[in-house]
Length: 171
Image 1 (cartoon, helix red, strand yellow):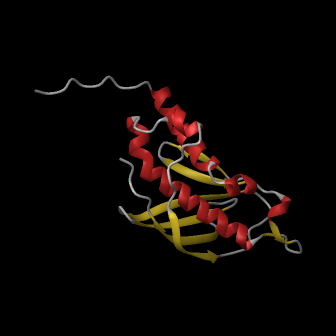
Image 2 (cartoon, one colour; image 1 turned 135 degrees about the vertical axis):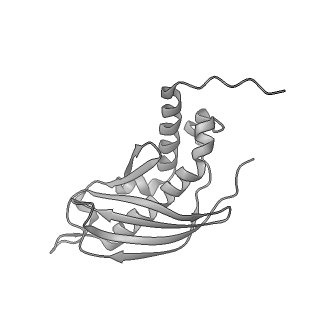
Image 3 (cartoon, rainbow, N blue to C red; image 1 turned 90 degrees about the vertical axis):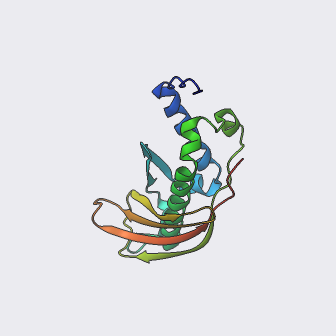
């Protein structure tokens, strides 16, 4: 005999759960808040935002965003996007307890195996944006490509490809 269909949850409840998960992922890494990185969510797509701050400048003569900051921004965007995608089904189904998230019970994040950054042009002293695309994601390994731009999405200033060790799935 079939089980009765569950009544769908209100959209606001699901949105609150998604927002709580994103806040928990981002809030769980202090370096993200130090750099000022935030994420904008549109459905299941995330855009990393690195707001300009004078402390991010590496070469004051140009001025240009420090290469380490650029690489960190790309890596953080890859990890948060990968985690977000990895946990999406649990967020949607309600299997993740948002009260636990707000109490600091964070899921484990993927660990970087390697990342290769291409600096295509100088990062100007203005806000930067990044999006990650997951090339492959399995139970133990994932490959991610990230692109960063400032004023024009078609004029990238950096891109990276990274490989990550995935955390074990929760039971």
